[in-house]
Structures are given as structure tokens and as C-alpha cells.
Amino acid sequence: MANRKKRPQHSGSGTKVLLVFAVVLFAGIWLTEQVASRGIGPAWLQFLFAADEPTGGLRVGLVAGHKGNDSGAVCDDGLTEASVNLAVAELTAERLQRQGIQVEILDEFDRRLRGYEAAALVSLHADSCQVDFSGFKVANEDGGSEASQRLSACLWDSYEQATGLDRHMTTITRDMTNYHAFREIALGTPAAIIELGFLNADRGIIADQPALAAEGVADGILCFLAPAPGSETPPPQQ
Ligand SMILES: [Zn+2]
View 1 (cartoon, rainbow, N blue to C red):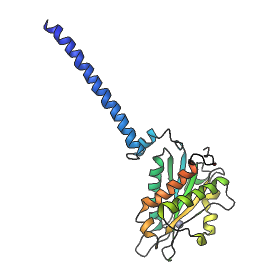
View 2 (cartoon, rainbow, N blue to C red; view 1 turned 30 degrees about the horizontal axis):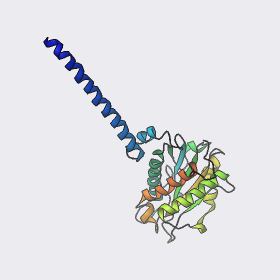
View 3 (cartoon, protein in one colour; view 1 turned 90 degrees about the vertical axis):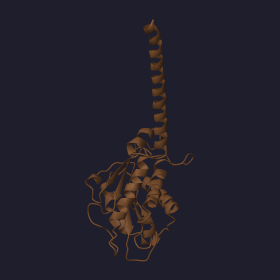
View 4 (cartoon, rainbow, N blue to C red; view 1 turned 135 degrees about the vertical axis):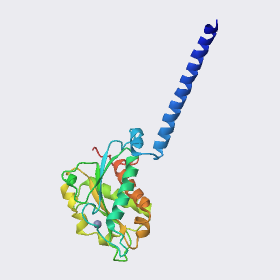
């Protein structure tokens, strides 16, 4: 008799345990998705739940200007352009990865640039510390593709909006429009170069608030990859 009474009790508590387990499991999945959708947590988590994003699975290359080669512009106190470029590139990569985008940070003369295929390539640089100019600028290759021009247009708008910096149109040089990586990458890869600002006058933003600069660059790339609904421009195929 004692055994008979115990049996149903056992299976009853077993069901309860299963139920609690199921509730905890679903709550865990729900919570994880909430966390991922807010961009908190590691990149692989974002990637897991970003499959539905229009940008999911796309590949983007970011050249951290001067990385692996030289320091770029240098300020009297030792602040280097290369360190600013890399900090902004890394924060930009994080933002894009949250949208399910695969991001590669490339050296200035990265061997992977030869024939590089991606949905977009953006090179990040900053301007001299020795002048009192302020402002940023974007360029694509002279006679660049329609897609490259669209990428540039997106970067101009988004970076201006995020940082509040002015457009410095008069210092766009041939170093920008004739940038070496433009000639190395695959023909179909849309590409642009951005000078984030001047290391002296714009230091308060590009060096001290790299997340702000990264927001501008990432938003520009996203504007290009996933045009707002109703806009005429189709998203890239790669
Ligand atoms: Zn540079």
C-alpha cells in the first residue's frame, strides 16, 4: 500500500520539475533574444538572433587607416592617427556585428585587399594635428561606381548627423580619390574613404568620443546596406 501511494507522488513531482525546466528554458531564450536585440552581449549572440535582419550575413571590410604600417599623423603629445582610426574601426565593427554583419578589420596594406569582395569597404583615416581646421570628409574613387557614390552619400549624411562636425570640402585630396585600396579590391565592391576629423580641433570627438564617430560610420554603412523602406535604392546583392 505504501508503495502505491508513493508512485503517483513521484510522477507528479517529475511533471512539476519538467514544467519548471520548460518555463526556465523559454524564459532564458526570450531573455537572450531581448538582450541580443538591444545589442548587449557578445557578438555571436547578436549574430544568432540577427538572421532576420536585412543585413544578416553580409560582409563588410573596415580598413583601420595606417594599421600595420605607420602611425599616420602624430600630435605633439603623442596621440597618433592610427590609434584613433583603430578605436573607431573596432567600435564600428561592434555596431555592425549587432546587425548580423560579418566585419573584418583590415590593415592599411592588407594582403586581403587584393580582389577583396564585400558588400562594402570603408577606410577610416583622420587628418593632421598641425593645422587648425575642423571637419570631416568622405570620398570615393574618381569615376567610382554608382554604389560607391551611394555609400559615400550615406556616410556624409550619417557621420554629420552623429558627430555634428562640419563638412570640410576644400581638403579632399587625390590621396583620397586615388586611394590605393580602391584599385586593389574587386571591381564590384562598393568602397569609400572617410577622414573622421582633424586630430587637433576635432580631438574632443574623434579621440575622446570614438563611440560617437563609430555611430556615424556604422549608420552610414547601414543606410547603404539597408535603405529605409520606401526609398528607391535597392540593397546590394553581396
Ligand atoms: Zn591617414
